[in-house]
Image (cartoon, rainbow, N blue to C red; front, side, top):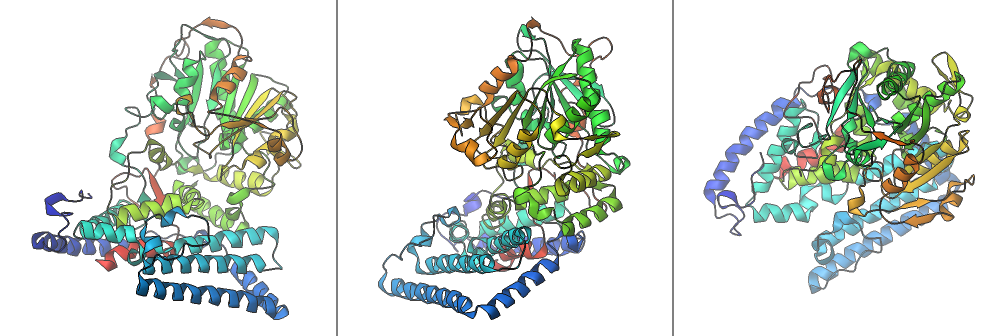
Length: 636
């Protein structure tokens, strides 16, 4: 466990004057080094095809670059001349400031929070390192941008992965060129480096040699104790889900109940973190009878479960159960992320079957048109999906490990490198942050369902183009005709808002509302009124171009929750006496949050569970993990 700076005399400002501490730390280093060697010897094997894009992408890019260089050598010479000119200028600037003591000139590039330490601006060495890194990054960007002969998707992937390489090589990721880490090492008599090595070894041991950076303090949270505490009861359970009905918080409630389908890539309590930011608690306090689905964490016994099974055994069963308990003809439904996509499939199926048990629907950060897959698209080409399919066939599930790793690399600086720097270089304990704790509490996907989703929806876009086969029918986006509201998030890196808009626009509903929330995939949704953050846009018109929609939209302060609550209340019927959870045919089976949410992801073959698996970010390959996993130990 990392020790506090200054403990036992460390961090007193008398670096090197505590021989007892140095002797003790040397013994700790020897012990940790032995543990490090032992754990790396049993590191899990990750298939090469899931470590990065196919080599064919790089070979094609290299061939295109060489062809361009031969056809247009002047452009190559221009790039090289500009690069070396900048490099020589940085070197001369570093020499001048070292000799004169003057402050270096600031970089021309926009501010980068990785370089917030004042030494990046005032110290000749750090200023040179930063400026040269930014020049190198720009040279790589320009080289990739100038390549011709690649398709748009190939170009997007090349740009993404080259950016990942440059982010990995940032000077902040190495101890010798990170002033924050060096300063802390001096202030703590090297204690922070020893603590960082201990954090590194602990994380490796917890995951049998796989470097998974812990993002949150696992000991600070317990689901059902200080997370997911809104009162309620489990009123139904089958092999795929538990249905939770929440206790009323008002004397009267709207007649038509609300049923929320959260994504099964993570667990439902993102909507019920703590009382102050719980959407579930807020909904109950607005006078709605609320049901929420808590999905099971699949193991290989569910390998053959398909999207049709999720619809029949999950959605339709939950809808039918909520209607029976409340004795209503309809329920209103909410789907979040992949659960929103599947809610749309379910509604299209019901329309095909000429049934209408859902009165209105709300889609949160939901994709139904996958023609533009955004940043996620770089992982949805055949090289990755073929590898995922082989892994699913072998294991029976798509392990949460791979999904969490992919999502982390979409924001690698925030979710991988910066947490690793704080933990392994600075020797700090991860923060007690509920959202990051939830972020690491991932779940598996059944093999059949995962491949069906990736192939039929993400790659082939069959729901928006030609129709998607489901439960013996072929369903289309245009089949959906009930009143609907969609909420997308402006900086969402998983479900791009423009793609969400295009999908909603293709639905057959005449009563449609689209809301664009500020912030990203999670923060834009989990945004309680008390925070007054981010804001949202609204526009009753539906132009074909989402940019035109935004240009004509009105910006509002704060969260979208109240305006959505009004929209929902207008479609939820009259007020009736509040309902307690369950009925004679559906007696309470246990208190919320239930039992399924407490199940950890079934372990991958060859891995054991260490000291907690939540609140983590994943390093994807040897090259990506090298700088941070080795620099601390080597520098000690």
